Image (tube, rainbow, N blue to C red; front, top):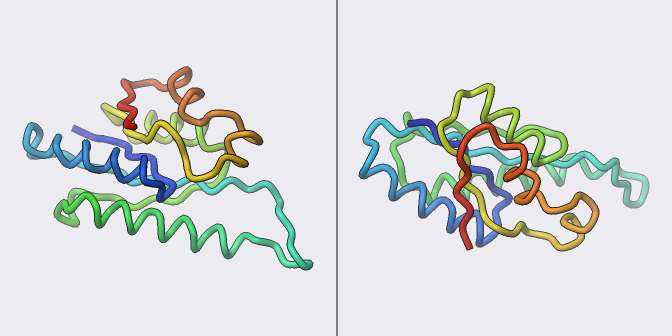
Length: 135
């Protein structure tokens, strides 16, 4: 079984990781793709592009989620992609032939939700596979 676990490092994402870990008992061949999507809104602060800080945030979110999973390294793939989160999540699940998408019901930031819309809601609309949403 292949699971795409979408993360932003939030508590909800870590709860989704806990549920995915439980699948390991049912599917010993479980492979988890931990994906963090970096939105590229072209943010500027003091003349500096915030791309590096977004990349560091994404790496930290992925590592925190992988640590929460406690799976053998060969059963986990770490992935960071850029774009509109819901679109990237669904496209990557299709490309990687995942059987399930797992994610938290809410993300790390209210501002991002307001600007981009509900990522979870959009994934539920676009997903090519079943979606496990945790609270």
